[in-house]
Image (cartoon, rainbow, N blue to C red):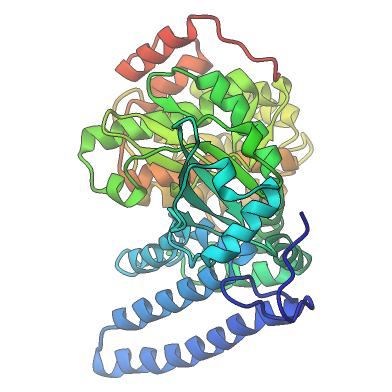
Length: 481
C-alpha cells in the first residue's frame, strides 16, 4: 500500500490530523525556534541565579517539557533520538538534581507520544490487510496502548479468542524519516543540543557517528515484515523459557506496515523502577541473560535496549518487544570479543593487547601501550570482574561511559588510536544501553559469576541461572548461525 495522500500532498506540506510533518525545512524550523528561545531564557535565568541566588529548576522543567512535546509531535527519527537520550546515564544533563527532570520528560516519548486519529489508523490498517477491520478481528480498541516514534499499538481480539497487539505504522513515516536521514546534520544537531556541555565530565563524542548509527537502526525498523521474521526466530528459541518471554507473531496479519502479535500485559518501566529490590534484581538478570545469551546461541543481538521494549512481571520474568533492530554476528566475531574479556579476567596485560590487535581494535604499530589498552577494558568495570553481588548505579554507569567514550577521560590515548570495526561499535552501544537500564533499576547480582557461565563454562550460581541451564539442557539449537 502506498502512503495515504492527505490534502496538500507535497512533501513540504504539513498533513492534517495526526499525520507527520514532511519536508526538511518544516522539520528543522520548530527546533531552530525553540533553541533560540531557550538560549535567550538561559542567559536571563543564569544571571538571575548568580545575582539573586534563585533556583533554576523551574527553567529546566519548562525546557524539558518543551523539547519532549516537540519531539513527540515530530515523530520519526527526531523522536527516536529523544528516546535514545531518555535512558542514557551519560545525559542529558550532568547535575544529579537536574538530570531526572530531563529524563522524566524524554522518557514519556517511549510510550506516551501523541497518537494518530482513529480514522487514520483504520485507513492504514484496512489498506494494508486488504479487508475490513471486523473481518480480521472480532474486537478492536481504537484507543492506542502506546504511541511511539514510528507507529502505535492497539489491543484487539481475533475471532478464535486470542488477545493480540496490533502495531500500525504512521502514514508518511517512511517519507518523513527518509528526509531526516538525508539530513544527518539535523539529528546530529539535536543530539548535540541536548547533550553538549551538560555531561558532568563534558563528554565529547562523534555526534554525527551517533546520528548515522541511529539512522541505520530507524531505517531497519520501518520494515515490519523483517521485524516479524526476527521476532519469530527469538520466539521459537525462547518458547517455554522460565523467565524470558517473546510474544508469538500472527504471521497472516503482518504486512510491511502492520505487525500483529500476542498481547502482553504487565508492569511498565516506571512501575518497575519503584518495585522491591528482589524483583528489580531478577528483572535485571533476565534482561542481561536475554541480551547476552541470544548472541551465544543464535548469533543475534536484540540491538535496541530501551525501557519501552520490556514488560515486567511479578514473578521476575520479562517479556521482550520490538525486534525491528536485530544485528547478526558471525561466530568468529563473537569469539574475538570473548577472547579479549577472558584475557582481562586472567589479568593478562599482553594477552589482552594481542587479542585486541587480532580483533582489529588497534594496530601493533600504534603508539598505545598494552597497559593502556588493558586499563581501557579492565578499569571501571567491576560489574564484570566482581565475583560478589555488585549493585549497578547510574553513577557507576557514568564512570564506565567516561572510560569507554570520553576523549578527555582516562582512556584518551587508547581511544585516539582505536580503529574499531563498525560492527563492534554496535556491541558497545548495546552494552552501554543495557548497563544504563540496569543502573536505573539499581539492581545487584553476582554479575561476574553470571558472565563466567559463558566465558569459562562455569556452573550457574543463581536460581535463574540454574533454571535456564535446565531449560537449555533439552538441546535447543538454532539454524541461524
